[in-house]
Image (cartoon, rainbow, N blue to C red; front, side, top):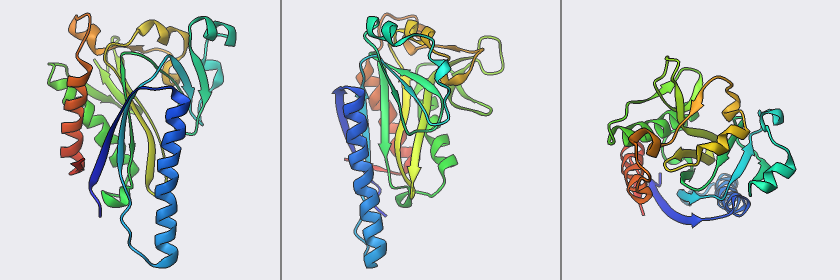
Length: 232
């Protein structure tokens, strides 16, 4: 079992380019697993954690409803935003500047073969990170992701999640709003949830801007601990 995880910071990168890159890493891992099984071999598979910040983009998961995108193609162009139907779970979400997007491409055979546990640990990573800023973040029953003030009229989502897995290899991941322009969420029904708001860390802390690198380092620390991973 290879618990090394190669961390790659892709900086600011187009969504489609990043999706294609994810697919390359994902497929290479799948191909190796198939070859190992066919040849009765045991060559270790690689694990990756990609960090990226995207230009304005809306993505719709396999189970999503396109009517949850509330603007026309023409309006998207005016807002310098793009739209993609993609192969993760979940409904529609937004990515953009000021948001930390993380794509773990892990062979869960190296860790544990439990998708439910995988999602809960990703949520826990974010919950522990936000706790370092004095925020009590939580899970919301039946709704993937990380929330504040769960169970109240003020419930709001700060981190969205949507993953794909095949043969225990994962791709896609999480999007944590750090300095996000929340106005872009007005153009969708976020994650298909009609009656709850979205927030960003800088809003919750009453700051103009939060240090994204600092947040990323805290996420990595908690990821390594929760997954018993060695980051390289």
